[in-house]
Length: 190
Ligand code: AMP
Image 1 (cartoon, rainbow, N blue to C red):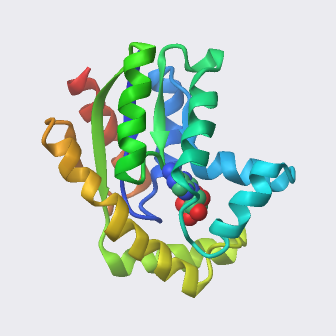
Image 2: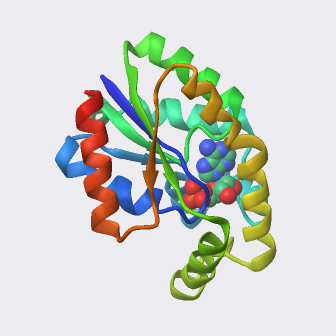
């Protein structure tokens, strides 16, 4: 059971790349952002709660997020592992994931870090806001999400670096080139 954790700031292209990897790896993409958006759309209790955080570009509390991920990773299509996209985002989530993988008998094979510079990211997010109309792609929330990434998620790179799992990927190439680089890294790690 193997897990690949895609790390990178909002707008780095994690979602796009994770979707493209699904087929070649035979593992499902598990995106906490997508799971929250699904719940939002269907107006579940979880969705209503998540909305109050997402609208501000803040993180949904760890307990809620971890419970949702546990549930998702227990489903049949994740029996061989998953490509994690947008999770973990805090140290508490990373610790919870370690615990969960111990229980499940899974391991993290590699943590690709998709690197894109700040100005390019903001430009991409504004563009996405116009195309997709995501409620959390306003200027204020974009800035807040960047800040949250720097404060809470970026430190996870050190945590995984200590375990020798992080490999940087140049996220400023075209989508196909990023995909090729990712596949090479994942293959080398497996
Ligand atoms: P994303 O699509 O990954 O950018 O996520 C959109 C929003 O969903 C984030 O700004 C958070 O409000 C929430 N979210 C997604 N993943 C997580 C997570 N791992 N922990 C807490 N909140 C999350």
